Length: 146
Image (tube, rainbow, N blue to C red; front, side, top):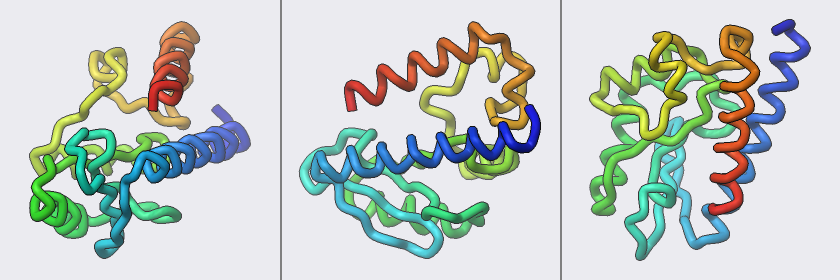
């Protein structure tokens, strides 16, 4: 993928991120900023899709200490500690940081896990068109439900 395609992919991923944020807010989720992360939580629902820590917008990296602060905030709200982020917007090392904190991916792309690589704009060419299309269909279905 050339540099222009990577930039365009990130632009689309940011739109997806914004859509998710607005959709969850529309369902009643509230947001509190804790350092470099936003903690989204629903006052009455414990659904994981409405209760999570996410890196603040326009943040390229979040240290593990800041992630832990957000997770602790969720625990105080009696919510399951969870981080939600869009992989293609962060360097591959970010997922290792989460893994080192004891977190596991909710729904990783199975093919990426089998290959031991992340599904990012930079390495999307390593996956078949079929894998990419199935990912887009899954994302579309998720957005329709949420």
